Image 1 (cartoon, rainbow, N blue to C red):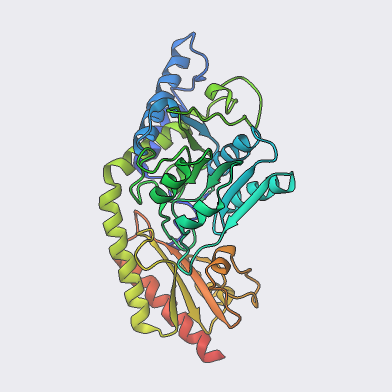
Image 2: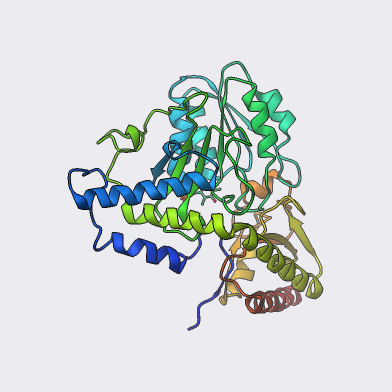
Length: 382
Ligand SMILES: *Cc1c(COP(=O)(O)O)cnc(C)c1O
């Protein structure tokens, strides 16, 4: 069986062969514990971790001492949100309605435990209005968390404007940038960001490793650690470091620094090709998300007259993800589509395409053809 055409890069990405090459020696020859600095194997591992830290920092305009390695963006988000909130019991948090579950659920947990929470609405394109952030800020607001780019509809937030507003208050500004690194300009100083979450497996790196940026100047951001232990990562994230994965994350960030901008224009071209091919063969398509302010590789389409689960069942040759725009099928409507008002009552599937580094024009054309054929077949059956 041939591999399906992989168009689900918001869910995860394949490890780039260059990233894998960089990692492999740290599974075999260089197996040292990065905390064991009394001998050469330990020091070799420590040096590799510090080089990776430098690369991650460089990719977001930070300095190397401001990056803590974690097990992924879910953990980075938890450390940022819960760790900062714990310093101010009962204080106020602000987030948006279309955040990743790991942000929303962390905030909801804190709300259940006695913190106050404001969940900002978004417009029909999925954008947060910076004025809404201004109005939501209170004297006791401890943290504002707004993602840079949405993982379902690809919408980019006006992070710089929001950061400038948060900066006028006592609150810290956290950005989940898991989908954004390499895919939009990202600079922690330019956008007044205090904390920023990343994950390697959305960047052609390995799964199970991520990073949290924590601003040092002018104010040092110090969340309470979620776990206690051996003091690694300044005590913020104790536990033996996953050296091969961290090396892979560093290599993945380096590739993004090198080629992110060129890659973006190629992905945009492929997305327009996919949308164009589908629109020429099918009517009843709606674009979910913002027409311009969106991730280059993201296409989220509402398709009238079909159910998402039936559509996907008929497309074994394509790896794509569904966020049903209606709740009549077995696929639940996504909180993101609900928040932009795209969760309609009628039969309409929503497909999320995430185009990536290794997709070809030929794959895009073949996918468009297979999808159009299956949609027509399902519509005729109604
Ligand atoms: C994938 C994703 C996460 C979770 O990252 P993990 O490393 O898989 O825990 C968080 N936020 C966004 C926006 C994501 O796309």
